[in-house]
Amino acid sequence: MPDTKLRVTLIRSLIGLSPKQEATVRALGLRRIRQSASHDDSVSVRGMIAKVPHVLKVTREA
Figure 1 (cartoon, one colour):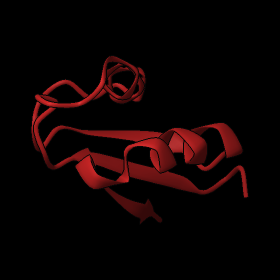
Figure 2 (tube, helix red, strand yellow; figure 1 turned 180 degrees about the horizontal axis):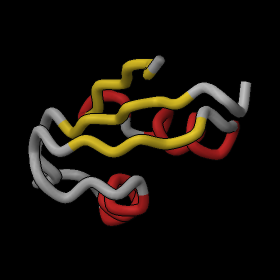
Figure 3 (cartoon, one colour; figure 1 turned 30 degrees about the horizontal axis):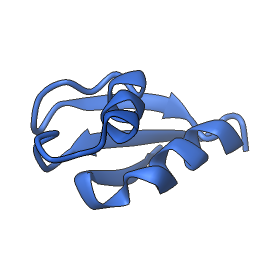
Figure 4 (cartoon, helix red, strand yellow; figure 1 turned 180 degrees about the vertical axis):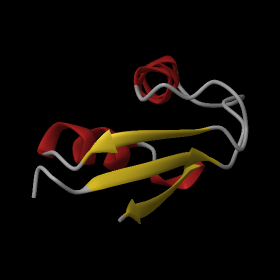
């Protein structure tokens, strides 16, 4: 699975998130709404996504 990539897009504002959740989103490389970042499909990235699923959209890249 390391050859697969995930495209993570911020779809909601960071306002109202706890500081830990905000730090998780920033660690994924997202700062603005509709900004996307590409990451390898790994356990650590999936764990970060699982902490803030309500503000992210995740799609698979080919």
